[in-house]
Length: 394
Image (cartoon, rainbow, N blue to C red; front, top):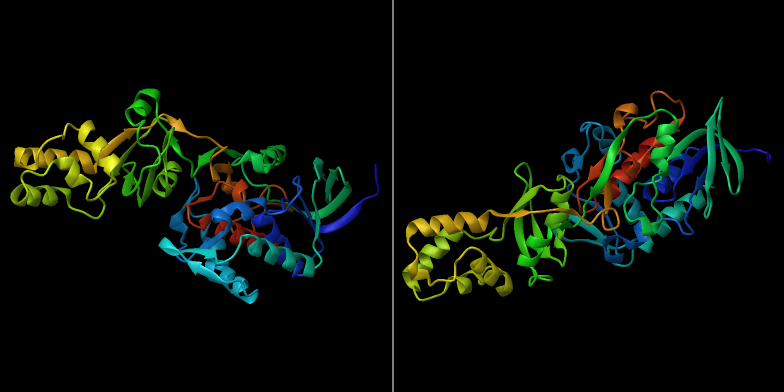
């Protein structure tokens, strides 16, 4: 066996959480090695936010996260907040702006955030090995890590390997394998922030709508989101759909109100009084795209003049159109999912340090955990907060 090379901390994964953990640990004078299978660090950072990196959100609270252990995220999010990361961004003189709903993006490119993290790491002596596969991990008094770059030991081993989303970027289930090897429970992973698909019959009904987008309120009966909905060749996407998808199982139905800012009943009443010869599809197209208005009218049998419908029909149609139910078949899977829901059971970890209760020195952070944020910078904030917490504990 090759000669051992010792580090205080070895981190598996050179993504957002791993880099944050590495720079934080190194700031405490710990020797740190980050290992990644990929040929480049931070690939998800680079593609995020359309190339501008939605690096956090002004409105981060624990309520913006899904987990079977919902209180787990409280401690980390309170100890390293969105404002702490914004301070880091500002210290590096990276210009940014706010979009809708508190989302913060770089004025320039996502690479600015990655370069900032790498500068912080290298300036503190963090070593990063890319194109490196972990072959074996074991633990006695220290962790022994055999890789394609050699054999290393460490006191603390941090798994920041991410989830299963976007496998073309190198995502694997290796982090879950490590957890299982050391006896930890896994909450079954499933795609989150992912487009929904229709069964063939429903798809045929809406075959003429791909590319049509409209603001809407989307609900599954338990939670709702108000953002854009986009019809696709396979079903539904857009921010509101991606948000609700993390709360849905295959076969669930969604209710969509395409008139979030209008009282449809009052609108139809007013038009019947003042413009009785107006046809209903035309009235609907004042609030939604024309193709969608025509589809709504056809689907619900509303190809009528406004003056032809009585109060009862206005009540009925308003109810149907503002709670339009779509039966989904499934979703587009991990290939199109922005995040992975489920993961390493957080009941196995300390919420303060992210260390496993049963294995001293073993930590899990970021997306590999059963903690998933909403769309809009929340998952990056979880990476920063969990990485910081573990980095201060290793």
